[in-house]
Image 1 (cartoon, rainbow, N blue to C red):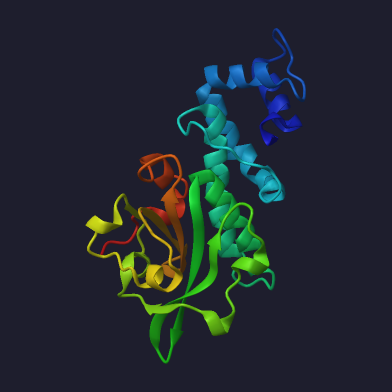
Image 2: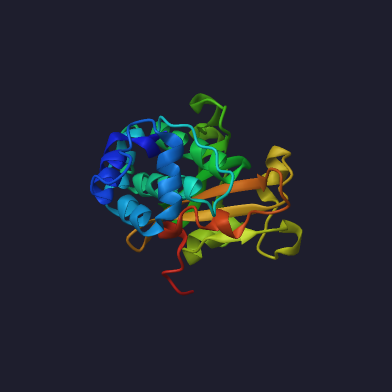
Length: 243
């Protein structure tokens, strides 16, 4: 795990000023204990040092979020923030779909969701609409299984359903029970045979423009997505735009 990188150990040793024990690469328990006891140093390190390192490892590490309130998992939540930031940068890349597929797989693991999907926001004849680009992504599904063929797209207007409202309002939506939410539409469930119980949606933003919506369905091991799950992507789901 990148937590115990050489630069992190070097930063801690510099902070300690050479006093007492010097940390070395792989000195896992000692490093984590020091970081737990020095939250301000930990914050400064992640703000200044960690994010550049994550760029090169964002799609190669395995995540397992257990306690979003602990230091050990804070770094993983910050990694999720970076992943969503990368989505915006990939919009013009030829390999965007494959990279986005990896993003969704990681988001699915972080949120412990049953599956995730990405809906692309586009305009046809001047009318905005959402369409399935990557559908029913899980940590183990292959890209070819999840990439939606244009002939099989599910298309709907942005005034329909929770996903549509997310794109329209540009706000994250956490729906604990879809049967009690008047914006939920079972339009997609009827076409796929899937039963949605709870959902979490994030708008993918580029400045003030919504590019698409990430949808996570059916939290595993819990009745609903938590407040901690909402913080996975604060930079994109933050309520910057008032409806």
